[in-house]
Every structure is written in C-alpha cells, then in structure tokens.
Amino acid sequence: MIQHENDSPGAPVRVAVTGARGGYGRTLLAQLKTTPGAVPTVLIDPDVTGVRDMLAELGITGVAVVPDGAAVDWSVVDVLVEATGRVGAGVAYARTAIGHGCHVVMVSKEVETVAGVALAREAAAAGVRYLPGEGDQPANLIRLLAWVERVGLEVVALGKSSEYDLIFDPATGRLTQLDTTIDAPVMADLLELRQDTLSRRAEVVAELERRAAADSCEMTVVSLYTGALPDTERLHYPVARPAELADVYALREHGGLIERPRSVDVFSALRLPGETSFAGGVFVVVRTNDSETWKMLAGKGHVVSRDGRYACIYWPYHLMGIETPLTILAAAHGPDAVRPAQHAVLAGRTARALRAGDAFTVEGHHHEVAGIDPVILPARADDTLPFYLLGGARLVRDVPAGHLLTFDDVTGYDDTAAALFRSAGAAR
Image 1 (cartoon, rainbow, N blue to C red):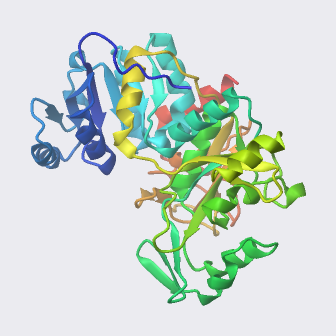
Image 2: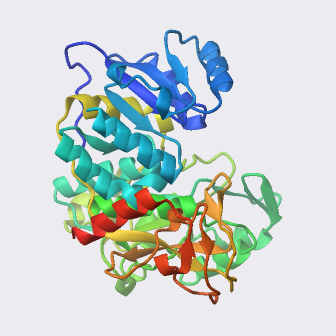
C-alpha cells in the first residue's frame, strides 16, 4: 500500500514528465500548480511548441521543454513521470532516470507489462523507488485491494469498469456508448438482473466495440503487483449496473461469473440518463462472512448481493494526473512500495490468419494492434511474446487464427525491452 507524505520537509521534489503534451501530462501539470512539495522542472515531448503553448495556457513558467532524453539535464530531476505510452522510448527514459539516481513513477502501462518487473529490480538495486502512477486504474485498484486485504476481507473478484458507460434511455429505447448510438428497446426488459440477463444484454450490445487492449493491459499491471489473475484470458466483460456487481462477481456456485477466486476483470457499466457514472472506477468484491454486519451496511446503501454472501467496495473515479502528485511525493519520500513480479504476461493471439511479412503497429486511443487480440495468461516458461513488443515488428512465417504469438514468429521488436522481459521471467 502506498503511503503519502505530503508535508515532508525540504526543497520541493523536482519532476520531469515524458509525453508531456498528452492528456495525462496536462492534468498532472495543472495539478502540480496547487500541490505543495513538487514542481515540474523538465518536460519531454517531440511537440515542443505544443508543450510551450500548453504551459502558457496553464500559466506555468520556468520549466525546460526538450524534444527527447538527450537534452535532459538530470541534475535538476528527482522524479521522472514516464507517460509516453511507447515501450522502446519508455524503457529508455526509465533506465536513464534510474541510472542518474532518479525515482520513477510509471504511467505507461504498456511499458509496465513488458519491462516493469525488470525496471523495478534495477531501481531497487540503484537505491531509488519505482511506483505505478496513481490516477490511472491499475495503481488505484492496487491501492484499494491493499486496503481491503489489510482489513482482512476475503476477495473474490477485483477490477474496473471499461472507459465508456452504456447509457440506455427507456424513453427512446436507444443506447449510447460515447459517440455511437444504437436502437435497443429490449434493454428496457433487461434492467433487472435475472438468470439470463447478462447473456441477453451481451446480445443487445454485440455490435458495439466494448473490449479494449488498454483494459487488458491495465489488468495485467494489476496482476504483476498483486498476483491476481483473470478467470478467462480475454476477461468476462459483463454488461452490469453498479448495484449488481456483488451478484455478478459472485462465485459460479452462487450464480455469479467467478470460477477462480481473486480474479481480475472488466465490466461495461450500464446506466440510465442522469444516473451517476462509474467513471472508469475500480472495485473489489468480497465475501461478507458476518451477515449482521453487512445487513446493516446494506441498509446504509452499500452494494450487497441479494443472497447476502458478497459485497462490493468501489471507487467510482480515476482522475488521471490529478492524483499522480501523491505518487510523486511517495516516490521521493517513501516508504518503499510492493515490487511487481512476473505473475502474468499480456500476450497476443491472432484474430485471423496472417501471412509472413505482415507488419504490426500499435495505434489508436486504446493502443490496439490490428488483427491481434490481447490475452492475459499466467506467467509461463515458454517463449510467449508480450503484446506491446508487437509495435514495429513483423511476421516471419504464416500463422493461423487463434495462434499465440511467440518471439520466434516475429522480428523487428525492441531488443532492450525484450531482454528486460526475458530477464524478469528467468528470475522467477
């Protein structure tokens, strides 16, 4: 569990941010203006002009803006916030920072799934801290789980909602996910949870793209820090209302989805117009054990299953860089946090047959790879290729649909990141 020391004495913590022009970078910089104890000193992004314009909008001065790591003066940096989202660049920035005695707050979940275990080990050897950045779902869920287990509750499932809610309007019979709206009048009959409700809801929204590589990536990060693994390699993704989570994520013997206790998962939050959003938040479902305690808590509005066996504890938010200053302060002042271990691997399974020479690109808001499904697998001794090493790689042989990609299938991946991934597996 990360502890925060917001009133630590001494000079302000000096912060460098990579990928500073992105949405995460802006929310962090805006918050650092009002966070005591930390100041930005170096911002790294190829779009130097864009970063300077953003700083002018935010009213921030006295910050060095550089296009890449070669121009960084590491003597004015205490903590690096790595937010490029690109494996090769993120690994290079993190290792350079560690080599200069700087702590690292890792926001790039793509980097974390490939090289986080090895980077954390390098940081420990160098006497600096390596932490996942609060504000994104992985660190928030890790923190929530640590609290839940510290008080002795028995965990059955943990996870988050997908990024965009499913908003159903009974007045029109239409359902909206972000910018897409479909006719779904039958959903009016599926607002109450019954035996076949989850399967029927899934049929109604089948034309919507609810799965995202980013979700699997984030749950893999949670696995690295907690040892929790998914029930199924592509996650369940039920369409569920927040008040149903304790029933939906019960064990199968009690009518829920969960076969493996302490499973990670993602759900699509279903709500009506005007209802509060889950906001991409995080949850933990636990056994209630003492029925009287949870009967009382249910009366206070807590989410308890209909049979009383399970309860859901949740934080309906993730505030991106607004929360990350807490991790920056924890990185600089301690105490030390739990280090990740290679409990799981985010791998790639072909969605269709592919040919030798086919090239892969990580693209889009959710960092997808066309033709490849992300899957979360228990850590394995074979040569499974991490999903985000596919960026820039190409196939060296024909592969059928459903094939789990290995290092032998591709060429052109980042050698340094690959070596770090393999070293983490070898140390298990």
